[in-house]
Length: 222
Image (cartoon, rainbow, N blue to C red):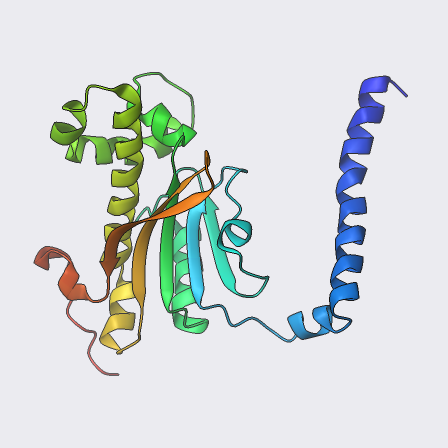
């Protein structure tokens, strides 16, 4: 077997070996750990984050398995016709009854950086267009920032804030609010350079936090 293939096999096997070690560690801490976990999940939070491998939701928030429902995509977008995202959101809100939905971006996000340029990247350009729309909306503020890195960081923040608004625009969230469900949606940014999460101070608690054109009337009682 060629050396390259041997290395690939070892790299792959390492994950399975790590899993066995992790299981044993958990059992040493609590012999009932997996029996308890298998009984179900009651997470209080839904995390909508970036697919970047450096931002693991459970680790950066210090939460355990079962405490946080997670959806990740490139640049933590909330796209109105993304059935994957909407299905996760509906399950989290309607079934799991989460109390907080957190959109978390991160400084240094490759998707946001790519959206700042005029380069073509292929299929992903169709996804990045959603981020470019954020830039267009806030172009006056962003274009006034001369330092490119500072502009990049602010773009990351504005992208998160727009995704929080887009969550509030969904019928899933608005119907939950109409039912009196205690649901807050938040915008955070994670700094990979120091590991700190930053609350951007944008929190929506009701449809009244949205522009009136996005506020739906309640569905008639069946």
